[in-house]
Length: 331
Image (cartoon, rainbow, N blue to C red; front, side, top):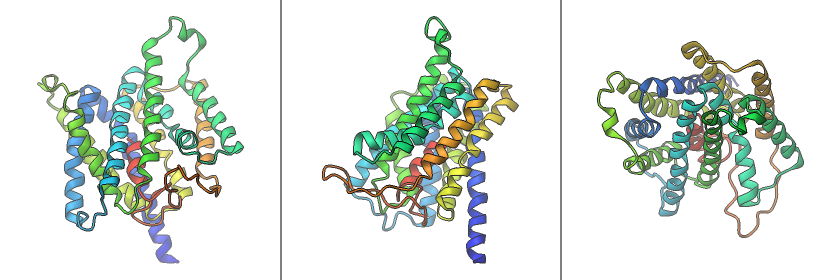
């Protein structure tokens, strides 16, 4: 009993540390001074070095469990993950770190909606109701008014749209990647960041990197700290914690992001916008922690996901490979 309690305490500390790191990611992105495409390119480059080195040191390349089909699914999820990061970082520029992060944190609802739409997963009336509550909170947090659609701040509207689309891409990445079983999440993440290098190579503007100076430190931090170290902390924590605690601690990420945005840049959301935050938090917890409904999958649907309880290093909140996409979502 003591051992279990110790393990859970260690997992709590690891996940909290990982979420705090996630919350500072926006500051690293902005302080780097690079364009979103350049930021993501160097994030995946440095991240691949960090994750590759860790996987090699731990011997994860032995008995890796990868097959051509699994690699294809991982690569497809990687495409969604890479462009999810690009859109989120673009949203920082057009809105603020606070607003973009809270809007982006509606990801769980897109996982549910896309699962019902693409794979005929059961969507209960309760989940529909809580998703409605979440989107009411989203409207409040976004601060968008009807007048904004007729000559308002188009850049701000674009930023909200970018954060929403980033969340949708995360949902797609989750649905694809959670169908990969028997592969360590570290290797899934490594394949996905490696894919990002050739994917973003034609889109990166290396000429704009001349004179970057101290910005290189921020970019290296995004790869080594926010991708390498943070992912390792997340995966270790997921193996030690029940789903309920993971769901609650995940909200440390947007909370820290809002505090960091205020402390460094003086940005903060308004009173009315703040009213939407608890609605999103409550709805997210209700949807995430809802008991799964057992149904017989249609013959045309992919194989059902594993149990949502993250019990081993290879498990994640929604499936055996979910840590790779969840960690990416903490962006």
